[in-house]
Length: 447
Image (tube, rainbow, N blue to C red; front, side, top):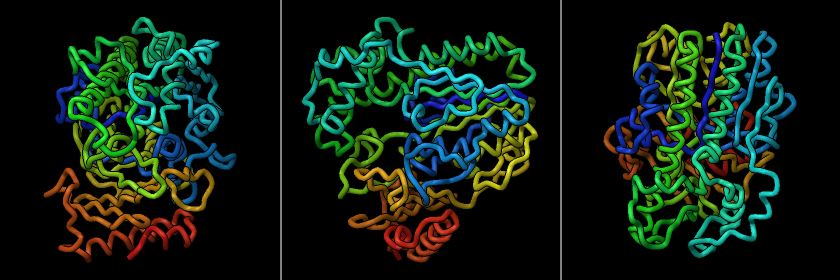
């Protein structure tokens, strides 16, 4: 069996048409979803970009021990397991954060799509369309990112197009191999939200006003209503652009006859607040203001197509990024040591609708390696019905009934203190099982 994983950065689950919550155009991925299993309760666990991928590549949940760091030499990845089993492995990506953190190691082919030489000369030419102080971290990332795409004139110049075309070319050259593993990763939907103008016009035609594309990672009071809608439109444009080129790759896979011989996974690393809970961004950049990870950020789109299996089409089984590696290895018949993640094959085959009892999501905010000092994160405990959010001061723990309050706006902790206490106790046990130090546990998992 071949394996193809397509990882899309910062894609919210509810911005895909196949999840039934949006009018945003995503025909490419929606067509794939019709013959795939849609996971309705998938979560990232370790957050954000690199921690999620570390979970996905290793099959473990690592946030209790460390944060954003290079893969450890002692951490065996799915690539290594498959390579030892005789798979030819390839990594096609434009997600530049993954280069220094070591995700390309062990791949036979590592194809990185990067800006043309000399892009740094464009930095001094970038003219911010809004006040720099109104963008994340003073707009320094905006200037860098806009300079990296200054060469883009035609749609095929955009990174997502280049990455999906490169993946298609790789398949042209390798699709007849006995077995292969291809991981395709694009950073496209991550801000700066700078899709070709005609994509943005789909959702915000004839716009006049301050044109934000690089959000502040703060509260929405900064924006006037039309400015906030414009930001949301720019995000939607990135989603549709990405879908078009993912659709190109999926069509290539279909034409090559690989649908019947390949396990195909489409997943994101996390989502983004787009005005919900008065927030814009995926996390705080204020060390004194820890943010909760609600479903707009922590829940993932996850679509999996297993050859020869067309049921179930939807599942509410609690799932996390760490399940990706054991699922791949199980499907390929490759033995691996015990992991926190679990194989999703029983769910894909319709044998069970239950996997994990709880999923624990956070960005490492303890004393371990790779802590992001300006990103104090709460910890979210997600169960089939309840979501419990705890964290350091000044955050006050909250409890949400997912059935009665799917948008997680009402705190039910006073009505159900025992449920909150039980979930907090489960969190403490999980953190200890994953090697968190007691100082970290006591500081965050408060009674």
